[in-house]
Length: 390
Image (cartoon, rainbow, N blue to C red; front, side):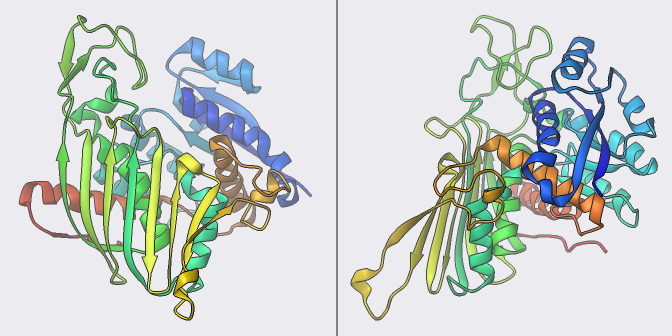
């Protein structure tokens, strides 16, 4: 018997659209799992945007008040895709109402709010899930399996980055992402993905030391609303950017590997370079989202050193979840497909009671690394990452 789960989506910007579209595809792409989504209600403070989402995706109703979504007894699970400042209040109310939650990263406006969200969920029966969607690329999942199976030996080096120049235009408007009262900048927005990827592949981070820089100190004020993709004229009134454009860090992993993490939102030449290079005693792996369906693999050959070298594996049906989208090798997946996988994993966890990963506990692990990096900005020294709370 198939299980249908009532869904509410709160925040109908680009990411709310992506979640809504993904839920509609779960029953098709992951038919064998026996779970479907029913789009019950969408919410956005902009009434026109809420109603447009209702009509576009087939929600049964639309509202401008997220409380209506949380209170609806026919809604079993919600996606939170509103701006970060709204997340914690919605999470608190949703957990109180017993709703399962898929929240976009970094969950809270600040690391402290993310830790609070994990604390609220801890001990409840609510399934929590986080939108670290890049980890679901089939070749990334394959890389995780190779590392776990010892295919590249003991890990020694890890380099992770998320270089994405979405804000490189100095006339990009001063949206909420550029103001400290709404949280950190690149540390929250981009480096959270890089930290999650490092945890997935190389394990927990023990110690960090980091630095930061704001390269564009002011931006035009938005005329009405405005996202971080909107631009204005160079002569428009401007406001101060009060959080960081760039973050870099040296890291030491609990398993002994040494590494670096780096993220920047104003870089020129990188479009969506979420990437890793991980080296072990017998091999190495490398990947970037800009070539999402390719994994570079290096296997050591002491018996024939001349035969050593990098090879490229193309995503195909032997890699996790690739076959759910197509049966052919090198017939690549895209960003929206990763959101479908994410939605399928979330709904499957609800339907089966299986452990959900990544959960709020995984986001809390990222938040503790972020706190240590921020502490090192002030101390200008190595900082220990706080242990997990149980």
